Image (cartoon, rainbow, N blue to C red; front, top):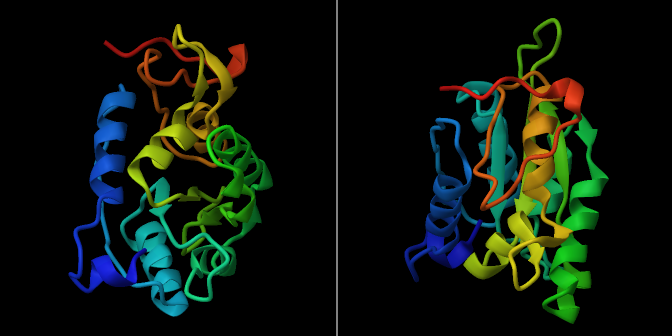
Length: 194
């Protein structure tokens, strides 16, 4: 979400950075569907609904528009289309970011589950997560804080995303452990795909 990037004032860097990170982190095949829109609440809401209900995205990651400024309405739009709020994601994103900048407490990032319409039985959900807009912050939030040897000191949010997608009826997603190790309880593990 960016007023200036969607108007062509400058090139958006969040979406390319996110695509590159996903390409390095995901071992499962995936398709990227992108939208670059202005910070307009109704437009954000309509786009989120379309990505979940029409494009059948299992994971929707937004970049930007999560601060306290009047034009930062991404969390408000995300909450407006939600069926369930997942507060742990926002808490963890702020915890990771606080290792890098004290202004992380200004972030209003949220994550929610939206059930795809029309509702199936059982419902199939999509996870929607608001990420920061800067490429470096996107990577840090997803991967977490690592020590000099690359071991997680504070887990990033992506470690929990594959299992969350399992639980809401989505596909089984595998990651490259060297980038981010997906966490699942032992009972939820499946044999590695060949």
